[in-house]
Image (cartoon, rainbow, N blue to C red; front, top):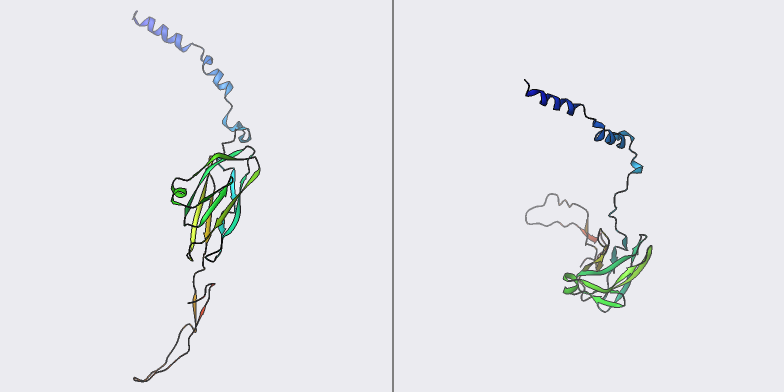
Length: 206
């Protein structure tokens, strides 16, 4: 019995300690959940890109074999700090050329796999545009397609521009009437009906 007295005394001392040293300050410094204002919380970082490309699709229409057509696209920095364009990938069908920074880069296997490095990189000032020339010289009558993927220091990556040339609308064949009824036909005889055929699309029928 005497041995248990010190243990009971120690438990009493522990129970009588002032818990406000470790719990009271926490309770006073932590507001209740229902008192938190969402407007006072810091905004989460945005991953929206700063550099936009316009247009994002360039259609050179149908060109003759000797024609060379050039147009421009705009890289626009919509943020309030400078952004850098370090290069681009140009892959697809031959005939397309991107001119930027005073140099021309025709599409090749290297521009599509290794990319083009701009040295020095191009800097676009805040809320400012950068003009880029794109040209196409057809190597044949076939439809040509390519993509330009810009490499920037945006967190979300750079924009992509689609290129197309010599595109042709799909052929559409219409017949009139929609159905033909020959009626009863005696064996060994013939009966003819007229069927009109025409194009219902933008391409000529050959």
